[in-house]
Length: 173
Image (cartoon, rainbow, N blue to C red; front, side, top):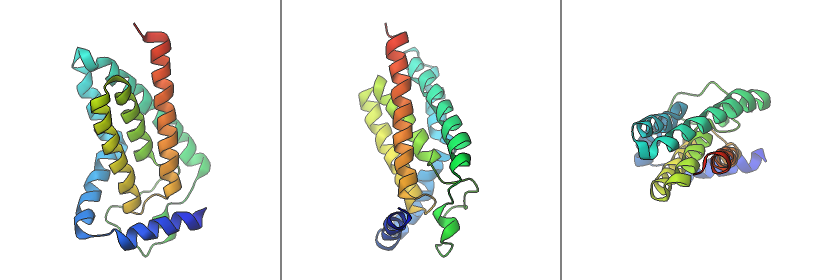
């Protein structure tokens, strides 16, 4: 599996790298640092009655994701990052010090996008586009393997689904 991961990463690095993306991708990935764009969005939602429930549930999902992904799974699996293994790649951001699997940026982004989509399809589509851009930025910047990203999407989507099911079952009007 690692061979396929490196094949995809190296394809991105060799065929998609350009000065525009070198400039843009660190900024996109920054939006996902510590789930900050999603935490800020959730906080803003709390100020409006119409979106308060979305904000609360997004916070709940992000908390579940941080606990299961960043605290539990990353340390349990302890997978090295591609930039630790292949240190010949010029890094455009600081080399992350935590483990690689699953991608926390991707997981938090897909948790938030999934929950937002549950409440507001139009804004949810925008959230999914941003989530996908953040996920791709992690590949472009050579800090995650494609399977880390895939796991982040799967776990993030699963957590969003569970939060939305709990909402539907216990809190629907």
